[in-house]
Image 1 (cartoon, rainbow, N blue to C red):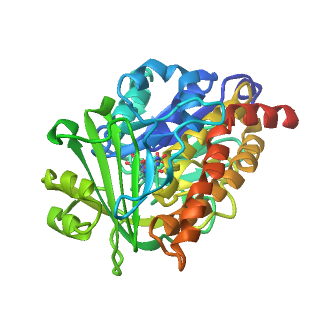
Image 2 (cartoon, rainbow, N blue to C red; image 1 turned 60 degrees about the vertical axis):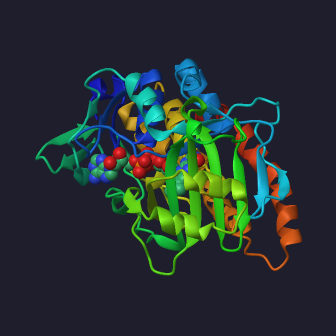
Length: 398
Ligand SMILES: Cc1cc2nc3c(=O)[nH]c(=O)nc-3n(C[C@H](O)[C@H](O)[C@H](O)COP(=O)(O)OP(=O)(O)OC[C@H]3O[C@@H](n4cnc5c(N)ncnc54)[C@H](O)[C@@H]3O)c2cc1C
């Protein structure tokens, strides 16, 4: 490797401009990495759905300068957030703060967080219309090729291309998608359409083989609802198939009347099949690494998928700061050592929590006890500071 390459900032190519890719772009940029993002779609965009941003990632996003932008669009939740049985009987409180009492969480419209992340990047850094189709590397650098005929060279390639990652097979034998047996109906409804609603709360109803949840997004002007129902046949990993509103309403017809009141106002909804993959054996190969759903797709039952993706980006930013192209393979190994155990644990716990939500228990009393105790796991997730952990890992590696 030339001495010029050793002296200049690391050149990073991020493949995928979703929440994970754009959060990583900001984290790397702020730490002096020369970063470019390549997204297959003709323009950046997100589906009309909600995502919860929890203290473990909001802490990082606020440090990165997104405090005001997210506060302007987030939906706050707090006291009155409950886990309930299907008839509305309260089982326990949902934790809405970390151990210090910081209520650092928002229900977010996915487009709102994506827009905030994109707006902070310099014009020209995100290259849309670039569908990655190939990858190769030498000891010196990596090359990515795109369906549009272009190819680019970088010192590090970060695959943030989602659950169907085309780059994952260049890292490890692919872990096949596993269908959970569930379909999720989701949508957004204007808060004003409902006469009354427990505002500023997150509500989860748990029934036999199904669960339903609602939380506010876009400063509380919209409510995000998701109904999880069993379906034997495998359904696509799509985020945007049009759902049958009547089927959704029928699935929850004999539940808490509050759900019925909300669904009465729903005119259309979307659905998607819920898939995850088992934790991977490794996340990196030389100059290529995986991030977000490309590395650790998980079921949504702890609401941590995007949060873990954001943590990944922060970790990479810290570990790449001040390093040279020559250091990249060692940096990626340190990234994997830091991130893979935690993300794998969250993948496993997300499956387990889905069983609680869907009441897949012989004794509901035992399930209810576990739900009340889930606060311990949630606090351990929320209190984690990935920046501090990555700085520690960087010190140890030095
Ligand atoms: C029902 C449900 C609810 C959820 N709720 C939450 C929640 O409350 N909190 C939470 O943290 N997470 C939640 N998640 C999970 C979260 O949405 C995902 O984990 C997160 O969006 C992953 O981000 P990503 O950037 O890794 O992948 P993606 O969002 O899938 O982005 C991948 C990007 O890569 C692009 N791309 C794909 N292939 C290529 C290619 N070949 N070349 C170039 N670009 C490519 C895609 O177009 C896309 O823009 C939920 C998920 C589900 C299913």
